[in-house]
Structures are given as C-alpha cells and as structure tokens.
Length: 472
Image 1 (spheres, rainbow, N blue to C red):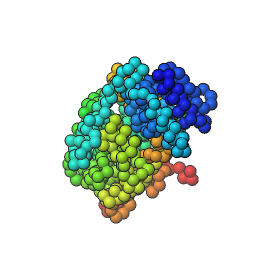
Image 2: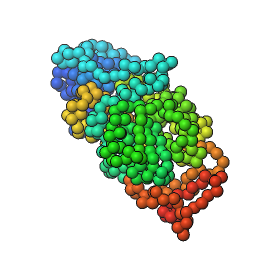
Image 3: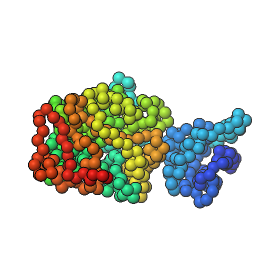
C-alpha cells in the first residue's frame, strides 16, 4: 500500500510539475499532495489505486468520470476546477524515456477495489445504447431514450430548475440575473420572436413540463398545444394547465412529432431544446414536418444546441453523453442545421447565438443541485446525482470553451413576398424581457389608431411600430 502511494505521488508531481493552478490530490491511504500555488480550490480523492492507474495510463476523461460515478473517486470543493484539468492532461508531452518511466510506475499500482476492498457501486446507464443502426431513432427507440433522461423524477428536476421547470438555456439581460428572472426572460423572448397574437394556434414540439405553452397562453392569448414523449412531463404539464385555469387555451399530449396530423394547421411552431433528440438522419423529416404543419404566413422557431464539428463522431464525450445522459442524442454544426432547414423549404429570417447564456444557465443548475444534494438523494441514488453534477459541469465548460453552441433560428415557409416579421429587430427590445407587452392582443395600428390592412397577396405584418425608439 505504502509503495503504491509513493509511486502515485511520484506520478502526480511529474505530471503537474509546471502547474499554475491550485489543486490537491488525496490518496487511498489518506495522504494528500497539494499542487500549484495557494489554497486548493478542490481535492480529488482516489479511494483505490485502480482509477489512478487508469487515469495515468490512458489520460481518459471517460474513465475518470466512471470512477467518480462508481464512488472510487470523489471531489471535494469546486468540480469546475477539476474538470478544467482535462486540457492540461491531454496536452502533456513526454520524451520516450519519461513515458516509459511513468508507464512502469503506473503499472505497479493496484486494482479497482476501494480502500475497504469493496467493488464499485452500480451505476444507472442506458441499457438500450448503443442502438442497432436499423432501430436508431425509430419511434420506439426514441420513446425509451426520452424516458431514460426525462422520467428520472420530476421532484429531482424541480430541485435545481427554476420555478417554472424550464429545462433549456435561459436568457440573461445581466450576468447577475437570477435563474427565475432569466427563464422568464427566455419564455417572453421566444413569444416576441414568434410575434404571437391573440387566438393564434401555437404548437410546441417537445414542450417539456409545459412552461412555454402556459406562458404564451396566459400572456399572449394564444391557443397552445404541446407534445412530449415523456410521461412524467405530460402528467406534470396537465396538472400545471389545470392549476392555472388554462384548460380552454392549452392542451398537451403524449405524441411523437412524426405523428402530428394535418396541413397548415398552426400559425406559429416552436421547438426548444428538443431537436437534439431527433438524430442527424431524421433532421430532414423533422423540419419537413414542421413545414407541413405551419400555415403559409406562419413562423417557426427552432432553439437547439449545436456542436463545433460536423456529424456526431464517437469520442469520450459523445460516449459519455449517450451512455449515461442522452441515449442517441446527436448534435451538428449550426451551418448544417440551417442547410437542412433551407432544403426543407424554409426561409431563414433570423439567427441568434446564445452560447454565453447556456454557460450561465448550467452554472446556476450545478450550484442549485450541489446546494440541495441531501434532498436530491431522497429522489435518486448517489450515482445518478454524480452523473448529473458532472454532466452539467462539463457542459458548462464546453459552452465556455466554444465546443458547443446554442442557436435560436427563426424561419418562415419560403414563398414570394415579405415574411411576417418587422423590417428590423427593434420590436424585440422595446421593453425589458420577462415583461409581456400590454398590447400583445391588439393588431398593429397606424399612428392614428387605424388598424393596418394588407392585400391578401401580402404576408407582411409590421408589429409594434409605435414602440420603436428611433436613433437607438
């Protein structure tokens, strides 16, 4: 035991000899080595030699993550500061003799049992992944994938989401906005971009726990319909609709987007944080379906996460996400997504990048989850808590580094004439976000108060001209 710890300490000192941060490593016998300068922001605790040996041999972040899930590795303090070491470890370069020496030292370390000789704990993972190519993103496979992620526990999600249970990127007017403020901002911002008007029909594809459909109905007077594949979300949304007295305006159903019937049914369609589950091969079908359901003068807004590399290649990160978090989730670049939309006969009207907003959102979620750890363990096991803590921390860093992005893409059906939006974006910013317009239910008017009247051949609708502040 003493011999293996000495070997481990030797490896740590050599790997972090030029380290400028502040970190500590505690070994399975209780000894601690402090690295860098100042008080350590976090302590990585190796409860067995095995995970340390694998990290030293392979520098594989997935192996480290799995050891953490299994309880063979712990982190006290700031998890962000630990995961930030990934780039340091992957950038290391040693000479052949140095590499051989480190390899020899690592091979002398022990097995994967903890300090009490216990095997790793069981960890929740998707038994359906990887899916056979012939079944990947079939309706049955997608139902199971959605249930794996979203049907963990409504109470668990409620601990760290905002009060309205919005599980997507918030919109921060200021970096110190509360999570609840930022999510209200986002809900209203989406409604503004869609130029919602009273009595319009709105479809929310992947409506989650119903926050947006309820907000749009309550503040903009629309008839909103949401679809989801998650039974937990469906039941929660039904209860929310009933409690808010919105049964005459809002409906929700368990339905795959592929099974929504009709042609030109909805004035506005929105999808927030759902198309990541669609699968790259199904993106054309997804966008064609939205196009089919949208009225000729309607608007479609897709809010989704993108990747900085084309396709969804197998890597440590994608394996981790598909195995433990989102079975069969796939991302693509923003440019490829827009290309598919255009091939689906959409005209892209507006594209906005919100990457910094998602990094802030995730940091809020991680902080709230960590603060409520004991409560969380009443709803999920320790391994599931660890998976979500590490997953959201890693995602925040990925957004901060630019490896992932999130875009709101507003589009209309491609056709002659102008689209149903204002000539500028100023109508989006005529009041603070989160404050619905008092005139949201009235049609746009001329300066004298007379409603605008357009020829039937024109789809141009200029909204809220009176609210534009010229020269700003």
